[in-house]
Image (cartoon, rainbow, N blue to C red):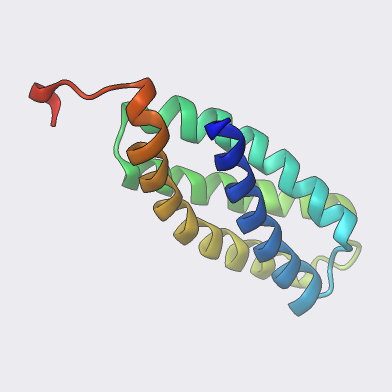
Length: 126
């Protein structure tokens, strides 16, 4: 249940950012496209970055990996639907940057609330 709550938080954050940037500011994608991209990005980044990498490494490293993944994925997924790619790189960069800031805090939430229970820290590791 906690993972569903975390996925919902991540999904809402990503959806809002992508909707504002890709649809509102740049007018590149419709809501359905933004929703589909949110689901794809959320599933991959939660499984790989948040559940697989975060327990094994530092928040800053996972956050940098998130930015790289988000920028490339947003650019490539946007390229599928956007005919005029003039602003696609900027929209992908801005979205990836804003989401990455949110991811930093989201990782702290995960480490303190969800991953701590699943991967307890030994006293010698703190």
